[in-house]
Image (cartoon, rainbow, N blue to C red; front, top):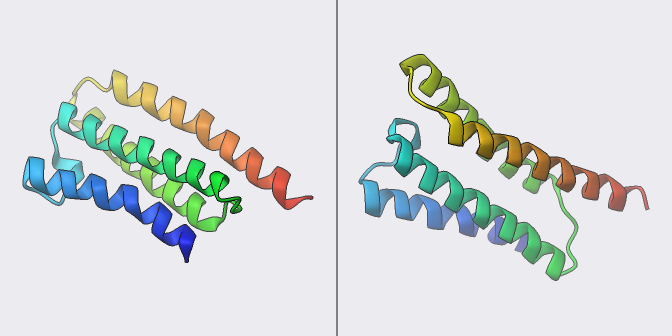
Amino acid sequence: MKKYIIHLVPFIISFTWLVEECQTLNPIFLKGPEFLKLYIFLLLGFYASISMLRLFHEAVSKVTFYGLAFIFGLGILKLIRGLMLGKPIGFLVMILIIECIAGASVIQYYFKNNTK
């Protein structure tokens, strides 16, 4: 239960910011800078929650992978929408590449601890 709460906090904070700052619940239709702020808040918060799990000596679970997949999927959807509209997507592509590298390290850590 602690894992769910720890991973839920960044989502709640990010979407509260979304509602308060942008007056919407749909992050796909945000303009570039606002979406990047939301995406960075979400990513940094989620990776901070993974660090909190390691601090509490909890194992990385499937909930972590579902959260990573949701965040990555949100970025891919926005990337596709940006490509369809012909908007500049350079920062989002860089963030997605960094997210892939960080996600690979989390997956490596997960498998290393599960095989012991």
